[in-house]
Image 1 (cartoon, rainbow, N blue to C red):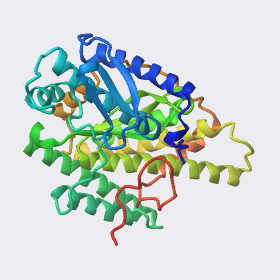
Image 2: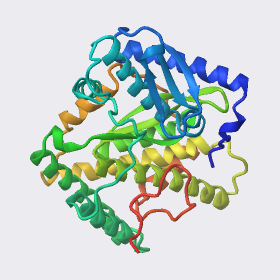
Image 3: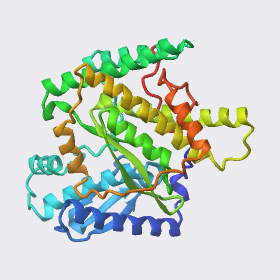
Image 4: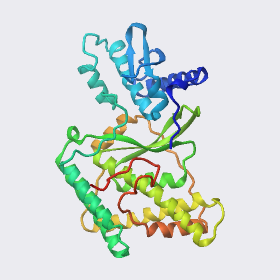
Length: 366
C-alpha cells in the first residue's frame, strides 16, 4: 500500500523541497510545451480543499493544493501544473484577458498541446455502460474466464479468441471513427520506482505491440521520499487503456506467482535470480504473442498503428528520448522463466488484494 502522509504533517523542510521540485518541473514544462515563452511565477502550496490549483494573475502566482501534492500521484500533480501554466500562457502571452477562464483560447491551446483542459487528474474511466465498447469488453471478460479452464487446449483457445476479438474490434473502430470521436486518454501504471527492471520493460513492450496502446516511461517525483523515479504511462482509447491496465497487473502478478512456484519446486533459496527469471517469463510470453500475431496475419488480421493516437502521444510527449538497455543474463533461471512464460495464459481478473499494480480491470459482473 502506498504510504500517505496527512496534509497536516507537511514540515517546513518537506514544503521547501516540494516547492523547489515544482519550480524545476515548471521550468521543464515551460521548455517542452511553451518554448520558454513563460516567465517564472511564484509557486505556492495552498490550504484549498475544493480546488486542485489556480493561476492568480494579479500576483503572478500558481497555487497548488497541499493535499494534491502530498496525497495524489505525481503524474496528477504535473497535469494540474500544466493546466495552470496554460492559464498563465493565455493570460500573459496571448493576452486573452476578456475571455472566460476556460474559454476558446484556453481550450484551443490545451487541445494543441495535449493538456487536460478539465484538470481532473489522470483519466480512469472505463467504457460507458451499454456502449459497444462495454459490450466488447464484456465478451472479452467472458473469454478470459474460459481461459481459466484447467484444460490447457481450451484455455489457449479462449485466450487466442480474446486476442482476435480485440484485434477485430480495433480494426473496426479505426475504420469508422475519427480523432474527435476517439476519446484518447492516458494512464499511469504501477508505483513509481527508482529502478526499472528488464521484466517491467518487457511488459511495456507487450502492451505496445499487442494491446493497442502507446507506452513511455515518464519521470516522477516521490514527495515523501524526496526522490526521483519513473512510472509507465500508456496512451490510447478508454477501452484499450482498461484492457492494457488489466494485462499489466495480471502479468506482473502471474510472474511473481511463477517465481514462487519455481523456487518451491526446485528448492531455490533467496531471490538472487528473481529479476532474471521474471524477465524470462515476459520474454517467453512475448514470443507466444508474436507467434499468435503471425497466425492472425495469415488470416488477414493485420493491425496498423493508429496515426491519430500517435498524434495524441506526440502532443503529450513532444521530446522523446530512446534509451537502449542490456537484456538480462541468459542463465538457467532465465530459460526456466521463458518456458513458464510460453505456457502462460491470460485469464479472468485477479481477485481483490491479488495484486498491487493497479485497479482491478474487467471485474466479474454481479
